[in-house]
Image (cartoon, rainbow, N blue to C red; front, side, top):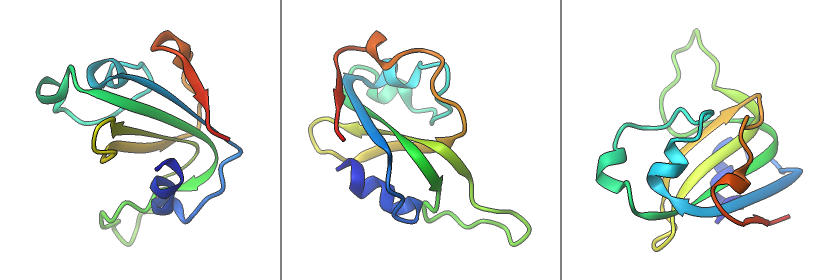
Length: 111
């Protein structure tokens, strides 16, 4: 699931992948997350927050103006619905989270 999500990043090969099971509202409340605005609709839904380190260029299907470049970063994060595994949010950035994923629950090392 996590590696499939990276396909929107030119098939980047992450150095590591970590995941934590939490709620949508807790995942969206992480201080480094700049996700969507539909928290009220999904606030208590169980999700997996996945964080990967590598070199990513985000091509998520949205058109990028000819004068702009696709977003790039060393960290790729995604929120997946724990029941359907549908990607709810995804993004890239250049800094690791300022708060450990452990604050949300037990962290799984996927790679």
